[in-house]
Image (cartoon, rainbow, N blue to C red):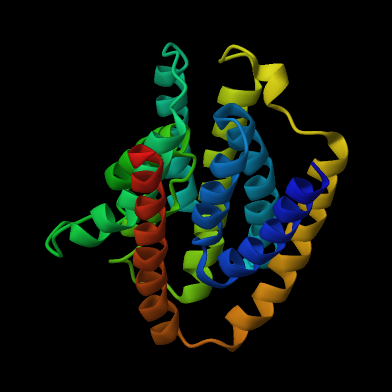
Length: 248
C-alpha cells in the first residue's frame, strides 16, 4: 500500500508537469497508471480529484489568457452530457478503459483536416462539451478529444493551455460527481484516503508550477509539434497494455 501510494504521488507530480506544458498528456498517462493498480471507480475519483487540482491551478496561473466565451459553450455541453448520463448505470472494465485511452489520440489524429471542429464556434463548443464529458466518464480522460477542437483555432499556446485547463476542470468535476457522488453504486468506496489525496494534490500543484516555467520559455511551433507526437506514443503503449491483459 505504501509503494502504491508513493507511485501515485510521484505520477501526480510528473504528469502535472507535463500537463502544465502541453495542456494535456499528463491526464492520459496518469489514468493509464491508476486503472492498472486501482479498481475502476476508485481510479476515476482519484484521477478526477488530482486532475481538477492540476487543471484548476493551471487555469489560475494562466488566468489572463482564458477565452471565456469558449468556456461558456463547453459548459453548456458538459451540463447536457451529465444530465443525460445521470440516468445510465455503467462501470467500464479495465481493458475497455485502457483500449479507449489508447485509441483516443489515433481517433483525433485520423480526423480529416477539412473537419471544421473550431471550438470558437458556439455550436461546435457545445458539441465538444458533450463529447468530452461522455469520454471522461467512459475512459477517464477527454483531453485528446478536446485537443481536436483546438487544432484549428487562432490562439496562442498560453490561450490554448489556459482555456483547456478550465474546460478540463469542468469535465473532471463531472467525473467526480458521477463516480464519487450519488450517481453510481458504491460511490463512498471510490474515495481515496485523505492522506493520499492531500499528498497527490500537493505534488500536482508543485508539478504544475514547474511546468509553467517551461511553457513560458517554449515557442508556439514547438508546442503544437510535440503535442501530437507524444500523444500517439502514449496511445500505443496503452493499447499494447490492453492487448497484453486481453491475452492473459
